[in-house]
Image (tube, rainbow, N blue to C red; front, side, top):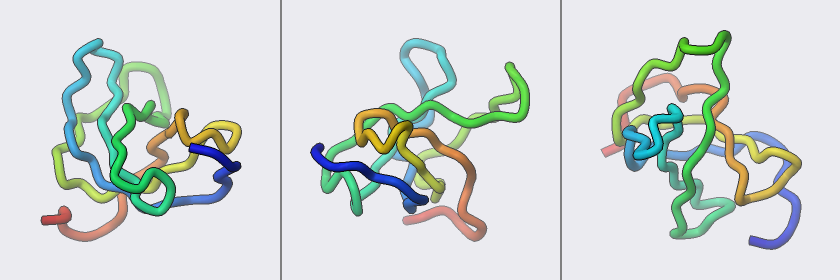
Length: 83
């Protein structure tokens, strides 16, 4: 993905399990990634404080240094999960 992506974007967790057991989630962020998916790191208050996120959870995503290949989930969008 080209360009710099600064700001906060709405995304959806597509898969909550991380095969590498690093606490990451697979997210879609259509405004930036189109139909592509990326493994996203999660922002947490303290190490080991990661609660699992279920598929369908709406999340806020930012991109480290504006790089679309480096998403970070910074929070959950209030409300029910996406269908």
